[in-house]
Image 1 (spheres, helix red, strand yellow):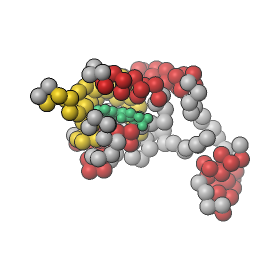
Image 2 (image 1 turned 90 degrees about the vertical axis):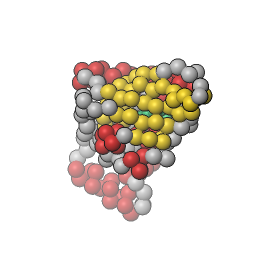
Image 3 (image 1 turned 180 degrees about the vertical axis):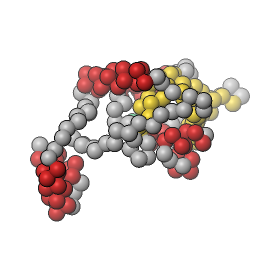
Length: 173
Ligand SMILES: Cc1cc2nc3c(=O)[nH]c(=O)nc-3n(C[C@H](O)[C@H](O)[C@H](O)COP(=O)(O)O)c2cc1C
């Protein structure tokens, strides 16, 4: 089991700007516009050449991306709600529309255009995706409080053992 200590800071996606990326046929990023880079917290240079799952948020169910790839590989367009993780581990929600880019009738790349999602819908989709991950036996979200001293003690032991505190907790279970 992996335990990650996530940040829960949401970046609001602007209403009046387009957010675009393109990938090769394997999902490696080939282009991002400035707004895309800004919202993700990465520079364009850091993103280009990386697989698009660099933005993958652990709250996203596997089934969503399976459906995405099955759909676009059939040559159809896909749209859906995606929660992404920023470089600083904060998050942002987008409604993504993905389609093929054709040159002389041949599929050469994929492109994605994203738009903001109303707050109520984001809350609904968080629940839908939490339920999907639960039903599929995937990682679940757990929010908990530890006494500060307990966490300090764990950090100290992890430090002595030269292991990340997540791995230490894992080894105790
Ligand atoms: C054009 C395009 C845009 C994509 N945009 C995103 C995105 O914004 N966030 C994301 O997590 N995955 C995105 N994906 C899907 C990723 O390629 C990948 O399937 C997903 O992050 C899950 O990672 P995994 O396939 O390694 O499990 C996109 C794929 C394509 C083709």
